[in-house]
Length: 632
Ligand code: HEM
Image (cartoon, rainbow, N blue to C red; front, side, top):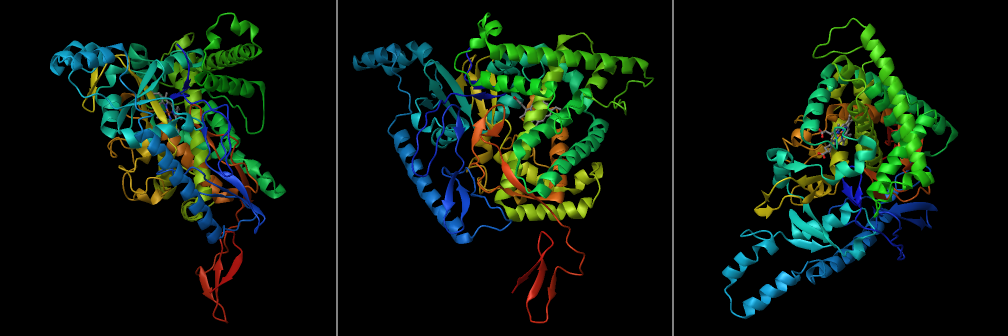
């Protein structure tokens, strides 16, 4: 099977060229989107980065890069926004015109279609012809699914899910996208998503995903289907019980504390930091301990095993965007230096896993704990320990596959959520201030605990909203195992389907201010938003039987990390930071990292009220950083 799909869930159907206009920069090699460009602002002598392709509902906001903690002047911001709006309108108009011209609309031009047209002209009744040619139309009496064809040159410079959004606005909640001989159904409708993921989930498999992930996850829980999946899901879900997740909160706190110490040094030295890779280190350290009690310590060390994990992850992503599956040629993995490196990395990881399993098995054999529903070894609360104590086969490949799957699933996703949350916060200082207020009042100086998870309501809403705007992954992949009906259209067995979470989460039909980062859209006293109470318009952890097993774990992990970081530091885009662009792998990455300036927060002095009158009638207010500013 060929690739052209990003590894957890995504097609890389759009390959890029490089071209530039004065204000829009596209890069090559990879499907990605330019979120902003950087322009020198001669007045302030600082760089301002701003979005060039803010379309309809994308909601990327200007990135202000400044060495101080000053806010950007409103007027500059306004003019940047109007230029950006004009560019956006022009681009949209061009694209709409091209869509309207039929450029993207597939013609029924094969031999059957030509023959049918000729027979119609000869006077043969349409009903007879429809019956005769139903094999060619594929959909019998049912209406035909709207169809777009994939020669989308003008939008091929972007992360693939972005042109899918444009096409969704034109073609609606379900349409067919055809690339040469391949076709995919793109689903952006909540009720169809619900049908596929929940109501008729048995009729859908993971399809191409399983093929791409095979080399690293084998038949682990994410790619597995059928009986293997059923058995393993039943074995793994109980391991993430409430007591385990509660114990993990300490782990999240300790790991984030290590990151804080690292950032302290950067803040004191005045050095900018690249947050995306730091988040990647943080979540790798957490998931290593949580899944098999291994301390990667990647925040401080760059050991062989850390390098091996990243080699395998990069390979998985590259395979998913490669047009030719060259690694499938048997001799290739022996002669290609890169493939040899991947094999060596996998060997090291497997060797490490074998050792960890052996150590853990010894612990399990020596302990006197009885296995029960909320079984947990305090010294080693890992998922591996639970699985072995529950009787999992030590020597099985399946156990290793599941451990690798959870390592990858729990690492990339959480790191991406934190990255985009910090990006969004840098665009909305008022949200950041409100967040800091809540964190200060709930946490004080302590490490967070389980009780705090209920109290950090606004912090949770910030994560909920970040997951709406940047779902990780942006698209879910399925393949139909039998004929079915989707939204009034009949579909055949073997259809490859992409459920676009990006489209669902940003649909102007489903959301007010769909493009805006507004944590307040989720009432603080309301339930935590999920697929059920949002009726499948919001699916950050999927839905139905294949919903993420780590949703609570991940929610607490990201809330703890966010709370502890904003309690201690202020974050801003660094002066001259590269533009924040999106690229797709398993999750949405930035193309050049998220470079930020970190400054230590000084706690505001305790004063009776925030505003105090001075003798000359001006007011003194305590700024975020604790310094006093004069204002009227
Ligand atoms: C913020 C972080 C996370 C996000 C956004 C996320 C998202 C998702 C989504 C959307 C799915 C459904 C995929 C599909 O239907 O095709 C999924 C599945 C899964 N996730 Fe997560 N995940 C996160 C963290 C984690 C963590 C921490 C773990 C492990 C501890 C984990 C383990 C899994 C597994 C094993 C599955 C497959 C479940 C199955 O097919 O039965 N995830 N995740």
